Image (cartoon, rainbow, N blue to C red; front, side, top):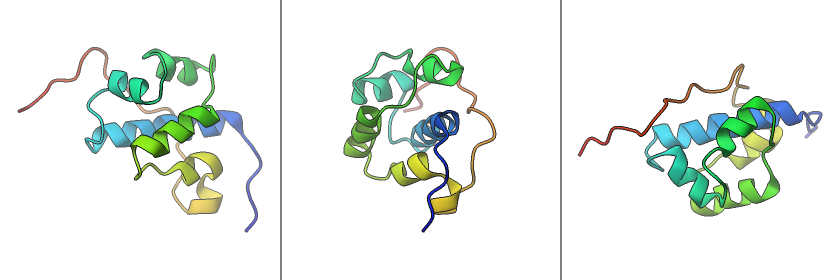
Amino acid sequence: MHLPAYDERQLDMRFLTEAARLLEEGAVHSYRELAEKLQQQPVIFRQVEIGRYHCSVKMLYQLRAHFPTADVDWVLYGQAYTGRPEPTQAPKRERGRPVRTH
C-alpha cells in the first residue's frame, strides 16, 4: 500500500476530529479530561487548532493506550490508507464545561 505524503496540518485536523469523536461517543467526558489522559495541558486542543503546537507521537501513544478504539491509523495516514474521509475543518468545540445528564 502506498502511504500518502506527510501533511502535518492535515494530521493535526485528523487528531482534533478523532478527539471530538471520542468525546461525542462518551469515551471521555470533557476535553480537559482527555488532555489529562494525554498528559497535556487543557489548552492543547486550541494550540493544535491554530497551529501553535502539533500532534506528537506521545499524544498518539497515550490516545491509543487510554482509548483502544481510537483510530490512530487514520490520524497518521488518513483516507488513502483507511478509507475514512478526511476532515475539511477542525471540529467545533463548545466553550465552558459540558452539561452532565445523569
